Picture (cartoon, rainbow, N blue to C red):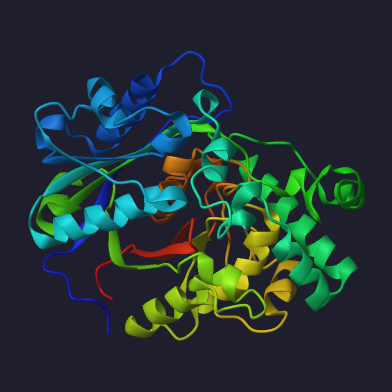
Length: 398
């Protein structure tokens, strides 16, 4: 049974910057301010209506201590209660879960949550490789790069099929990104380039190639959350998007080192099974109309579809091969272009529910899926296999 909330909570405002590799014209506070203004304009409210500001980025990567204090000149948080959250790659999704809980509890009526990163001003891989014990976490010394999933998929499905499937997934993501004017990387890839990319894109680790991997992006995303009473009062120009339920699951990373000979159950599948069971969802492929998934590489994205959607065997490959994850497919995946296109780490996991909410509102522009979106799923992923899964709904009649 779904968790009972004291109050229903909705997303009433969405603001994003454009994303790029270098935002030379803005400092961090100015970048935050752009997204905050857009979210307030979208909700048609002012900072006077906001009770609390939440802030999240990976300060380890940019090496700025307590960046929320500096960003107050752009966030509007001065004189208001402020909460800072950092949970690695899941930071943006953790902000969404925390904001939902705080509003549902009755502590606040309206929360403005900010996820951001300006990766040009730091060193992501340097931060990752120096944050862990060099013995027990030695496999992290490649940073966020690992060829393990690629090798496992090749062994399970055969080299040719696995490599073609991963590249098809990557090209599909690029096609979606090319429809999204905010996306960072928009290469204009096409399926007739598949063979060339499979052979010529530089290798990073094993069969994980440069073209498969996510970008490092600059940008900010802001979401505004309101209680049901406030949402119905404030949302006159577009419908609120309701947060039905969410779940957070993580596993200590050292278990993978100690028991590497036996692959443990992915936190993705565990989280999905728990979340869907308590909400009475027996077939997520049939229930959800769109899935905004945190996919740091094409190999991971493709593999994780099986876990999140509770599929078995090669069902996920068949769905990809039959174009069922395309914009016009049975379950569109990442109409925004996903993480392989845009990755401002502190905001990346917030972009997933933000883009899913735009789809529910019908406000995604050129990358809007053509059919009505009533039920959306969004995920986040970070270190120690930290998985966040969020369900968004158009209506309150679940």
